[in-house]
Length: 155
Image 1 (cartoon, rainbow, N blue to C red):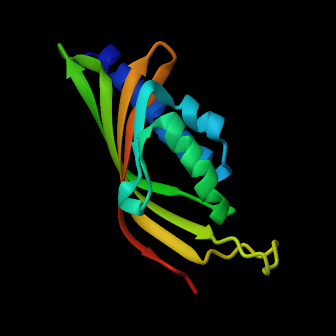
Image 2 (image 1 turned 135 degrees about the vertical axis):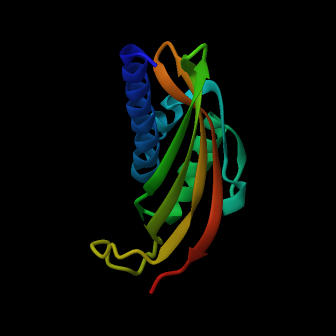
Image 3 (image 1 turned 90 degrees about the vertical axis):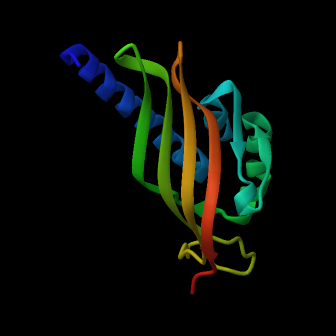
């Protein structure tokens, strides 16, 4: 590889990492406009392994907006990120895959609890499979699949 190709690969990896971090922040902050903006127009998400839905990102964002009211405090930790960039003719291509583990502590809504207390009382963990595509606006998610491995009520 040439230095130019190596630099392009590094820049792609950084941009992909930013998209995935943006995904976690959008879900944690309940910013559903930002969530939708991270996807390609035909992007899809699949939360069925966690008891959720599968479908176009816009529909899934509406489902998340309703469902996440059960968890007013949440924080995705996405680690062990493994990126595989498509290579075309020796140069970075326009698609990529990322697998990454997640740990997601959350606080269940409880009308009788003190809102200042934010100790998590529910934790889920597993692995994400992200599919990404290079667009004229940068890297975007074409698919997100959640593979929940375990969940536990904390405390």
